[in-house]
Length: 311
Image (cartoon, rainbow, N blue to C red; front, top):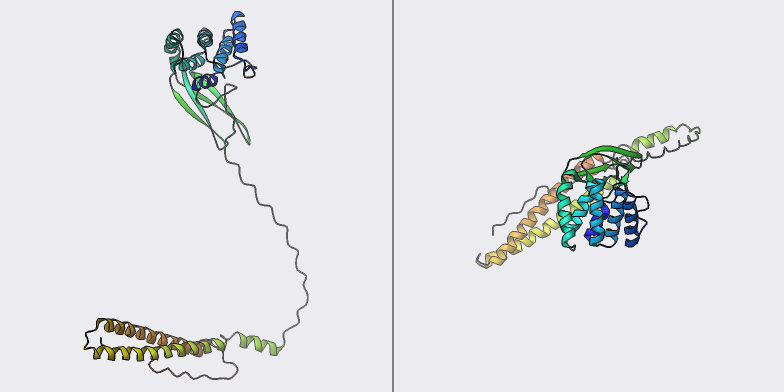
């Protein structure tokens, strides 16, 4: 039912206060007839249009068109002509709509209102509530809307035949300031006994360096890598011998030997790095304040050990 909806959007041009409360098309048509007979052409146009919106009929549409034209309501007249152009009306009503459309279209335009920043800003034009796509008479109009901070208004000009889109903008509310935390109570103070010379010496010793545990961890890691390097070297030699016995033609043995050789070289380098790091810890970082001394003997084939076997 696009036709009745379109007409109902144009009813806001100073309609009677009780227009929306009437749900009977006959009652609306009767009120339009009484208003016309009383010489109230504008009220009659709105009542006839309301009757056609509730139940489309050529009789109500024709009466609404004639009353709107007589009252000079160009916006309402154009909206009614659009209703007729959508079809479903008789030839006489269509002919009248075409004739009045040519007359009033140069005097009206569309004013589309949208809310921005507040979906419920309830915009209105000239004190009357409007919805998106309303027709208005050409000229200046007062657009007003509501925001959380209060009502706002602006003058909008709509030229004849123009389509104007107006955004009723509401500024975003400022975030509430976080509550100020309550001041924490000052801690109670109490006298602190002076440290004894013995405790001072202990603190001094404790701050000299790392625990010797880290040194022994490094020794263990170095030893494990050295053992792995030794095993890998022996495995590489074994694979090299197998490759030589095959007449250096077995591709699988060659690939296995090259992989073993690479693994051995990597393990040897890792062993060297671990040994150097452990030695550095022992000399410069670890605190051996208990009088112990540590001697570091590099593992066979460690720092920077590299095994070479041609495959």
